[in-house]
Image (cartoon, rainbow, N blue to C red):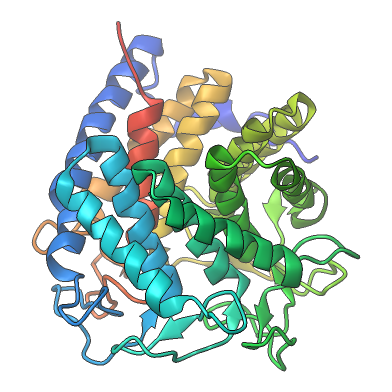
Length: 423
């Protein structure tokens, strides 16, 4: 695998003169932890508590930057599942009753309105009134539902959530798993036929039968399900999924993940996503750790550090934010909220793996940039994106089928759990 020799030393000298020792790094991380915790409980979660519940049931499908719901917007499976995950995690962390109630609300709506009782699986979206809208089956959406339901069981002990998560996992294995080539197929019709167009809105040109993004969602979902349901077959699938990242998705020469594939794992375009690569770096370590496979853990540790170093060198800016990526060598300079959240966790994970203070300083630098530029201190939550002048693009929604409370709340929960500093 390509090594970014000297990257860390160069960045330490040029970009982060403040990383002067373990104590200073520890204090910075502890300060960051306190600020991240405060942002979670006073800014991020309150936005969803106040603005997202729909009096007619469930949660609004889209919400503007100012918290005003978009009338008639369809409700996406992924958004509902991410609300379920976020408030389940919040209840597990803080035992606040309102968090439990919102998690229960999301669980009930997902089961009652998204689950397809005739053909199995779950719809990609329902109408504002809760009737099926896009009845196609997206493996991304099913993975998100497994993630949210398994976390709900983890937080509340609700057996219905565990049963539904296991049932969705079985459905994914039955229909989406490619036993010939490995990995998972992205898209199906309602009755599990291959569609004319693979993929889903917002990803590539629609011709990919497999994508990195969907496999990331499966990686987090299977890991979380295995935490609460240590089934031996699931363990093997999780190990195999981690192997797919190591052998097929991540390019060892560039230290980037390939995004779009044919059924046989032929890459369809040269696109790098710095955010996906950062996210993969730590989720891959989590998955390997859950299996207890020491050889896999060592392999994923090396890959994770190479991924983080590559993104630091190519996509991480001196100001502290992570660029979006590049296609065919052309850099995309757009700035979105979620890569920043994933960068913080990836840096903290790299620091934990190595003890290298440069990673700790990078995490704090990125958090400081988020605090000053991405957080909406007026209405709550984080802005969807910034323009080239670092100004919020307020026309972009705070919530829709693609933007929920998962990336930034998860960054907070991971930061809180991973940083425990004592002099």
